[in-house]
Length: 463
Image (tube, rainbow, N blue to C red):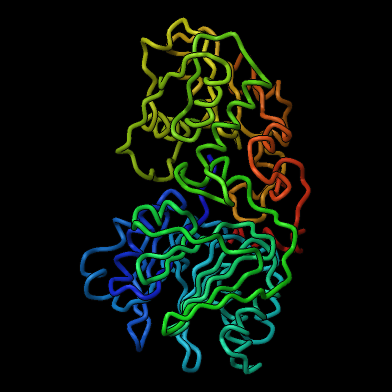
């Protein structure tokens, strides 16, 4: 199973900034279910509340109404791509240096974090966490304290040194600064709600708050909001050729969001239609494994003319599950989430549409269950190419050993999962399903990394 990375939300100029941040994070809960945090500025100090768990578990009314005061706030939900799963690594990360109180929330992953951390430690810097995000904070602090830069210039200087994927929200006293990396790998959008500004990883957060989407931040842009409603945009590096993460459209983003200028639902449906054209099969019906395969399965059914059926029923009341001590318990945990409709499966030829296959173990368990209920044939169609290369930019497959397609043929994978046939969408088919196909990073499929990882890039991922 792929694991989500992080979600950001920021708001400037709203009397209930923390409460709005709560709802903004709630709308993006799918992006990270490990920890959540909100930091607000009350005019004199930063107020923070962070915890392990879901947004609704971390925040209580007392936090939103009494503790997190002020009209500026940033929030973060996290799945760890670097740094251990513990409260110490929850974001936003807060520090104080001189007269500046600073909070930082980061979505993405730095490929030179280990290199920069080693350099800073040799200069005497003391780190509190194992997060790559803390490297950014220390670079900003050094820019202000040693080089005498203002906060905006210190942020720009720090962002020119870091390499990798990053969308940042920075709360520095009464300024809110948003930053995107030079290649625009991670999404970050700007909106407006009456007289206040909002920022979020996904536009579905704007919909919940009835905010108007204004625009996506540009690659290499720093956007600054300060008192008086002033807004400024600074291009801290020259714009480069975009390399946006295509997994946002394949899997990560909510289908009702617009990401990189296109609707996620429509892209996934188009991927399913392309898949049906590439790999038709004589079958009784098409079904997804909810929820990730739903919209590609709709497209496959529409293009193939086969009926679409929801034969796997999801238990919506199953939340996060603890790490199971045995394979039997892990299998039981998987079966708790999805259960087939017996009468629909027996004796049927089924096309199962999935968004992707990473390790194959979860899908194997689900296919086994369909076999137990008497499915005559199971054909799997995958709405993205085979994942053969690790991702260094924030997706939780950071080594080749984790990727079944990197080490086995399609025929071997089909046998391992228990399928009559298996087909992955071609790269050309994937790119035909999105607008501006040259703007996407395809490194996990073809190994062409837009930013080469530095020595030790994987080291912090294992801490």
